[in-house]
Image 1 (cartoon, rainbow, N blue to C red):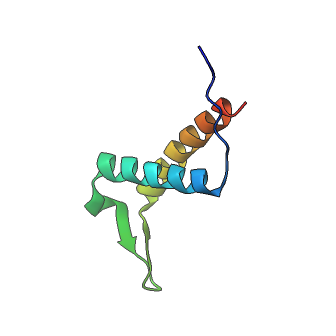
Image 2: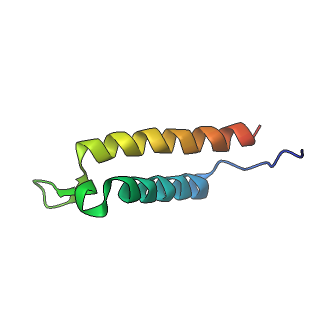
Length: 68
């Protein structure tokens, strides 16, 4: 089986973030993922952030593994 080479760059990092965010929203539910912060910005809930970190780590690990 031929190994596919994937270059890790800012575009791939952005795509990995987008995929991880979509997985988190799909798993938890969009209404339960986001919360308004004191400064008026919006961010992940603690549970959503934990899940995002885990999923993002899996995605980037696989991208790096296929980049060897």
